[in-house]
Figure (tube, rainbow, N blue to C red):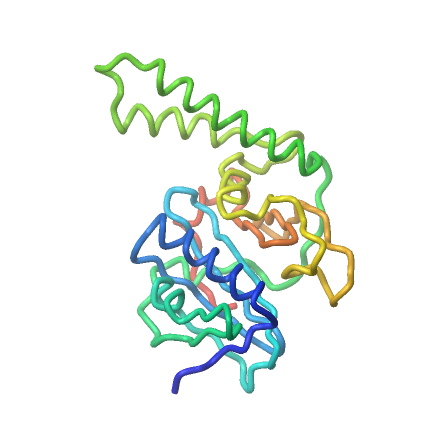
Length: 238
């Protein structure tokens, strides 16, 4: 039986469509894992090349009648999003890639110090992008290869942000998914009840996981020096 999600408003639908569209941009065969309970649904995706999980929580106008936990095609879900009607229909399940069985913990998060302010975070990403472009353009023709560009990228994006252990690739992912844009006046996902002030950007940790939380979504990843991204994690339901 198909599940129709009644989203809180057209803005929630537009944000969900934008999130799914970015995932499909990086990988046309992208999958997402949906977890819905009560009045919200969390959408988890793994954008190609970033080695992180991108998470978007969408508010619902009508709570789901039963808990939902399913992996579906991001493209097929995107096709069902109706911004005017503020709705989406959950497509048929698909066999998900290994990461769909490896999600961040639900609780136990604590805030870590050292994260720069939002403007400084955006500036750090802009500076890293500019450095990559400059170094790429400076490569002699015989060295302008995919492997050399990947080497430069790994060097730049493995650097940490400020006084934290968060790699710049996680911040780059947040910027690429629109999670670091200035906060609009209306309530956004994760900001609380209508009329509440949006939560600030924060760096959180729970066990071996890091999470960059913003009013528009989160980027989660395993802490550097542990398993090396998501590839070596043990699979467990959450």
